[in-house]
Length: 100
Length: 171
Image (cartoon, rainbow over the protein chains, first blue to last red):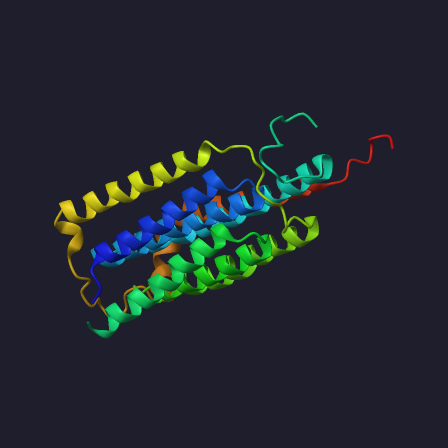
């Protein structure tokens, strides 16, 4: 069997890669995908600890995280589409004001 | 090295490789496709950890619905070929420094404490099956479940309002 710490390390690496994507990339859609990567790293850790403690609560939390992520992605992508309509760009360096 | 460890390291290699490829791809469509690979490997990890229901939700909701939405928006906006501008040069070393710090802290937590290095034991046969998940979800977590439904409805209404064409604006 695999130790829990291996899942811990993998989750940390994936979370770090997602944070790097948020900090380095300037394309708003790629930044959103990096946030999804971080949420998935957290989900993996939830399931690993749920298995480690023999409880089901962690899996329920992952279910809620997935549902909230779906709502967040829908609203976020709608915002990106609205911003693209008024600014013709998805570059985060060019989006510095909320005035249309 | 037994089969479980071999499977774990193979899948971890695929997951981390797909995540790195997602970060460095110039084309946003390729980034989305690499992220789908990453989500699929995470779903296999969920299966290994005895969570088949969560694995199926991961495949259908994340790798299916959400990533199709991403691909649709990327192709709708034609935003797949946006190059990095020259600005923001100071962010790159800072971000890499912070990433190294985060990994170092995690390594200290993992190897400095003994209780998280235990091996996963084989669990009970009914652990994590959809019936047990459903019983927990609709007994202990009924209120959060209903709140989630309201949240999804609010998100749907919000999306329609945000993307609606403003018809009152004079052309």
